Amino acid sequence: MDKKQQEEMKRLESIQSIKSPIFPDRVLLSKDRLRFYYLHEIELDRIKIDQKIVVREKDQSLLNKLKPQIEAEGLIEPLTVMDLGNNQFLLLAGQHRYNVLRDLGIERAPAKIYLDLEYHEQLTLGYMSNEARKDPSAGRRYGALNEQFHEIKKKLEKELKREPSEFEIINDMYMTKNPKIAKLKTKEIILAMLTSNIRYNPDSVVNQYKFISDGQVPKSKITNLIEKTRKGEISLEFPLLTSQNAFYGLSHLVRTTPIINDELKTDTNFRHFELQNTTSFLELLIIKIIKPWLESETPEIDAAVNLCKRHIFETLCKLIANRLRNRGFDIKTKDGTKAPLYTNKKIPWNAVFDDLEYFFKPEWLNHPMMAKERSLDVLWERCDYYVLTHPGKVPNF
Image (tube, rainbow, N blue to C red; front, side, top):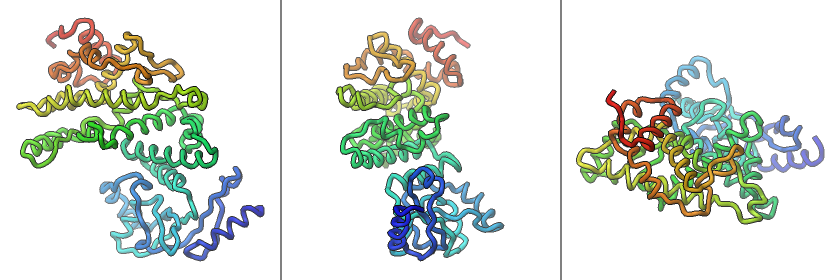
């Protein structure tokens, strides 16, 4: 190691909770990046868990599967933690292994212990661990991506002494380092920020009704929520649209390539308008369509559930994109830089919803032609014909 690396090692030794040999990450060292760790047994009582870092919620089925494995063969892979000082540690990876060990009455466990990680590094390591093992639900994953984006933005602001562009921030995130998946991950990061900003905005109708959920919520639970609302036990909630389904649908309406520096300089960054437009679309969908359905004497639960299925919601978004294109709004080009909601022009939402009036009829959404179809192309052709060209003239079959 060179002099700089040796000095860094000495500094880390002074903040190390347990005296033990420190190792550099050899892969990063070859890229002139420094990240250090040591190996030791630590007390489980001294480990803290932050759900933003470990990303996934506890999965009881995974705990049930993991417990007999650890009972039979012991802990094969150490926990991954960060040294917080004073013999306190933050869990970065291994939440389920940690919980199984606690259930087995084990007090100490081997760990790989990182030293002095920045917050964005903690988030990245937690995300990488979950991505490598088993994808968490889209909602949890998008929340983690949103956190990482904003932490890396803060880091770059300090380094560059200016506002970094989306392109610069995303380019610094680990997920875009693999050229084979960079385009998909970039799209996912952008959609993650959009859905998180809408979902967790306290003033958003989407937030008020918990419209976007981490994963699929069973119809029985929706029914139960409506019954409890009628009894005055809870406020009305309908977690109908999953983050994953929102991803597929909204990708037809929003820009999925990052903003570059030149756009910041020329004041042609319309992300804030895009956020407002997407929020308006989802709020109108709730207020004009779904809320009246679920508050009626005989709630249209099937129609609400069907509307939010992946292929049906994506078909709706594609229909809206084309209606806006016909009204002079940009449609997404091949490079993904243009999309109908990425605009500073006023969106004629009421007119668009009027154009698609038949699409929102419960009898159409519940029709087997729609409810049971899984092909996006077939749904698109049916909606183009029976919703736009010949509204309502659906054959009996």
